[in-house]
Amino acid sequence: MDRVKTGISGLDEMLSGGIPAKRHVALYGGPGAGKTSFSFEYLYRGAKAGENGLYISLEETKEDIIENMKNTFTLIRDIDELVEENKLIIVKPDKLELEEVANLLEENITEHSVKRAVIDSATMIRLSFQKEIEYRQTLFEFLSLLRNLDCTTMTTVEATTANKSEMHFDIEHFVMDGIINIYNLDKEDRRIRALEIFKMRGTDHSRDLVPFKVTPQGIKVYVGEKVF
Image (cartoon, rainbow, N blue to C red; front, side):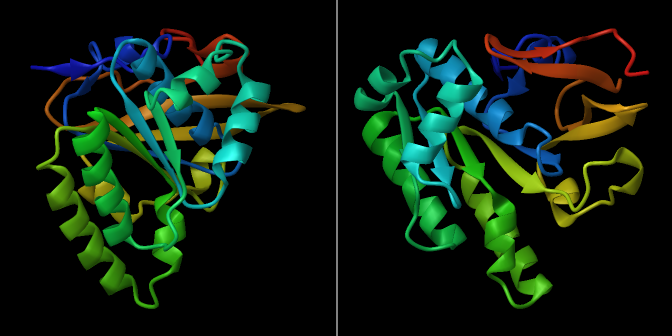
């Protein structure tokens, strides 16, 4: 099986070597859980390994994303060079429509040989639908299209809470190829970030709940360690 290594310390070990190629994974978590940091490092590591990446932002501008990531990671000092060379492409669509996102994916896969993509976030598109059934139908059609593209994607999905005990299943849990749940857990007077691979079709994977940290050198997933 072909796999795409995320390059994130510890995560590939939990995934038995990486995400199965051409699969579509959701990063599901509450505010401040680290979804953007995870997805951006995934693209950055890919760009450094020769796999061009596309970041589709439905909220922040290209300039804001670059500035925020520079403030988060010291490892991405060459981000401006990667962007200039179209190895890491950041775009903000004019419309909150999955059709627009699909067009951007197809164009950049063709023009810039994009192999990795991030959609941030599906929640913004979901809010643009008046009826839940319309979003579900459109999402199914969108995923059918993605499966015909030579690209491995991560999509961020906002949870209504950062607490594990209060999370519930959304439509993305059922239709995406993979789900990585990210939490902010309370421990006495502080919060601990943790993740679990809820599902990953086509491969075995760790089912442990493990802590992680967002460090200036990149995200560190502490495989084998207990959260509490």
